[in-house]
Length: 395
Image (tube, rainbow, N blue to C red; front, side, top):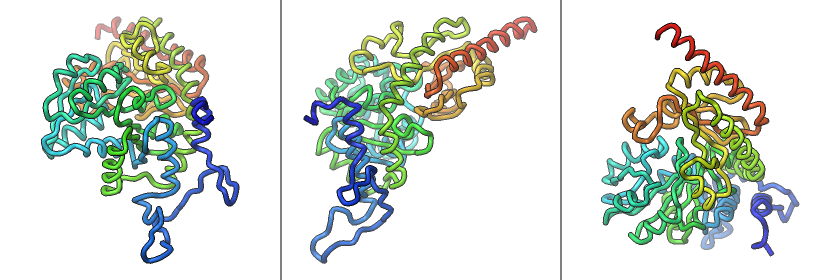
């Protein structure tokens, strides 16, 4: 019967474990770095918490089940998870990576892995012919973010996975924006799923964490070796907090996604907004593909104003969202990618990635969407008035 459960039921069943001895409905926080072994010759399942801890294991089992993988891994941050995944490569190996990849991933590739003779090629992963052309005999990984950050480009996970498989390499997918509620890359052929669990899975801006889920035992064994060897594990209390966040993930992200669609539709009507990037809108170039491989356009959108001055004015007059890095929280978060998430990219690289000087990213929280729209209407009115004054002054 368990296989017939809907996702929301499965999510609760995987995050609530009744303790057989006490009846406690929550997984205990096992604050122990070491574990007693019963005798000299026979060691138990746990010996040292870097190698395994019951609380962290409960989280890892939950995310593996929700993503449909064989084994999950909880890391100290999203970048710890991504870095560990790339360290599956060896000197001389090559990776194909999106042009507009997250700034932290860009940094690890261009400033760390390159020192170990691991090369990379940046491509538009939405262009399958370009992806195919970039594959070399030594390519070991095709890395995908979909929808991408911050311009919400949509990549065909199944098609990229088929290209990777045909060339004997792996497909890694950053699923942070969608979460397993809306998109499950392993079901589409990917080999490894990655999350900045700091975002939607936590959902409360109180944990920094990363998750990975492997689709095969062989890959899981290799990733576990790295996690244990480097010690990039998630602490026990943060593991418990992520389990708590998972319990409400389904209702949180669905509510936020509904609001994001409404806000995106509103922004499309405003002349101050040059472009709205949201794959849940019919006019988005990836909307049809998004509808095929995911259940929603998600809770994140970006929109482009005329220039940085307009973006500054908007931020100064928007009173409801927090102006900050990160996303995926109960509060709406407004970000300026050129100086936040993608500050690592040079101006030229940002232009190539489509990150304009007037681009703002919005992660929609749980506020009333009508209140958010009214707030943004006031901010856009301020942008319009600022532009009028600039024209009159001849600046």
